[in-house]
Each structure stands twice: as structure tokens, then as C-alpha cells.
Image (cartoon, rainbow, N blue to C red; front, side, top):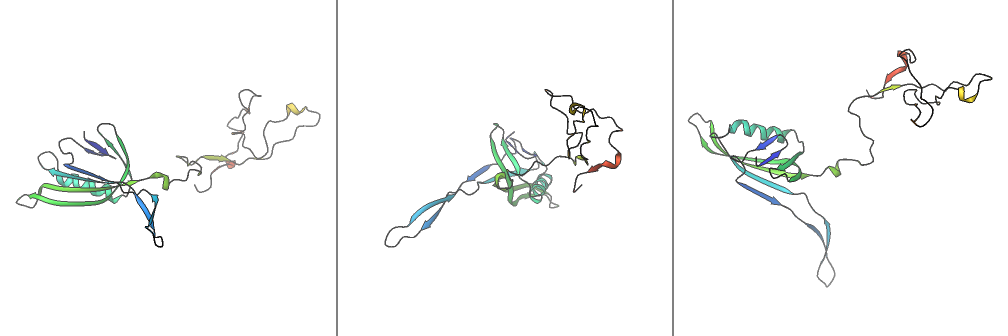
Length: 200
């Protein structure tokens, strides 16, 4: 295996004939009166990778392979680029796809296609908010909590319910080192009190 780009596998036989990686380093030019301009580094642009490959009917179906590239470009999703050596190059999106028919059958069926795939680096740091709360994979159930009941007159404070006001009994279990938590049974919470969280 030469490389994997998301779910697209580049086998050694059909591996790119040419791979070009471009990195630029940007500087702002500040003009100075009666002196040479000064440069200030402003950041490094994203890496660009160009893969040129021959899709030949002797080892692949050029139409199917080309359709796979087009589908990956059309969904605008970043994919991991990992080489067969185990090198993780980063996440990239397809920004260009150039196709040249090198050999066609009598009915116009592609026999050999030269494809040039342009990839541009995608940095997740610009798309993710590190301070954002994690999003659950499912919509969690919530229980509307009621205020904690007061201890009966003459009863000790230890006999009072350990529920805290405004906190669900499901979440209000004592730590393992403390007093035992609340033991719930199916009849303790009426079905009318079980709701889905907002936005569900």
C-alpha cells in the first residue's frame, strides 16, 4: 500500500507517478522611508500536495476510481492522509481534480486516464472551539428535579433525605467514601417527570 486518503487506498501498482508538496512562508513587507523595506513574518499558509497518477484498465476501473475521487471532493470533508510507512501527513481536502484521457476504447470507454489530484491541508484548530462543551453522541435523558424534602419534626438531620435541592436523584449519589447514595426503584420517578433535553 502506498497511502490511504480517508477510505481511498492508493496501491503500490497504481501509486502516484508524481507527488509534489508545496509549503509557502508569508512575510508582510513594510516600506521604510529612505531605506530598504522591512519584513515581518505573518504566518505559514497551508500545505498543498499534488498527486499525479495513471488510472489504467489493466489494474483498476478508471471510471469507478475517478468517481471515488469526485465523491470525496463533492462532500467537502477533510480526510487523513497516511502513507504506507506509517507517516501521518495530516488532514487534507480535495481542492482540484484534473483529468486527461490518455487512451480510449472504440466506444469511448476510458482505458487510461491521467488524473491530477490537488490536496490542501486542513487544520482542525481553526474549526474547533477548545472551550466548547463536549457534544454527546446521543440526546441524554433528563429528570426534572424537585426541592429536597425537609426532615420530619423530631428526626435527626442524618435521617433527612440526602437529596439536594435542584439536583436529580439520579445524579445525587454520594461518593464511595461517604454515606450510601439514594437507591432508586422504577416507581420512584413518575414517567411525567422524565423529559428529553432541550433541542431534542
